[in-house]
Length: 462
Image (cartoon, rainbow, N blue to C red; front, side, top):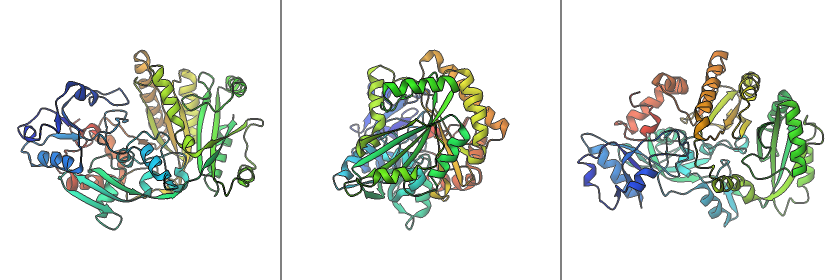
């Protein structure tokens, strides 16, 4: 947890065992996963309890010149937001703990080495979100330390305004110190299937069909381009023979669309899962001969990105700049996005350096009372341009992101950024739309001195 700016007399009163001036700690807290922004804090707090965080926020709030506080966990923000405090539980820890009781959370993120507070401050989405909603839709209760230095228990029925403000609130209203979330019986195994398409209309039509019916537990999609490997950062799914065939297909068409689904099962449903999955996938329009399946354990499926991370770490390719761009695109405009962005910008520029995700979500699984914003259509697509770069092509990828945003603006595609980053207050107002006035009122109510999370730069000068 970082204190931004110069140490004031007020901060010097904090117990020295809490406040670290160690250069290594300060250096670590100066950057995040994105490696795009560097802000040097004055000091770093390593809280050992909720009371430590309360003391810090109360000291700042009571100071004549309050200091800003940026909560941080594993620092997996992209542009300096860093919104979950150090030492809290990761989703992988939640998985291991709940599996001991035969249970598991209902909604996940693709990557599990993220803090609970961090994803709940955004939304928390993955292939299960079409069915169960984002992670913020699966929270019963939270303990939150507000910017006033107050510890508040909140839910839909108790202190509900804070509850809805914090969920998807980008860390602007409080620091989540406890969350009570929905669980379900955990399966043992997963039947995991990927299907390939050379036609975007057929790809999206089948995706939308699958999220409208009951039976599947996970639906995602991605792009395979002739200049990028079919397996990319995820674990090896395709065999060497499959990879060769897919590469030929991608070379022929430029872009291949991969629809990815999963069906969970256990010892009671092992005899029926194959037939159930066959019926669910009947009538789809994928390329014949390119329906590929594998069977994995439940925990290996959920933790599927980890092996890719470890491989990149071993090659020195994890700790590099990540100019990611994550967008929500209305269903009615996803075809325009494909032609203008996937084919018109990314394919033509021929320099893909990371996975590109594209899959639909049901808006009725989101609670509009929460701070998170989405396009105003029943179905919208999440787009993840998860690029990694060496320093020599960082400027190129940043420019490509700007081209994509400019194209959407000129084409009238009403995107919403997920994990948002904006340069002007006007952009933030536009992002929240009809929610802006409420968002601003809640900031005044719960963090009136704008102590929390200055990295977003929503309420600080531009």
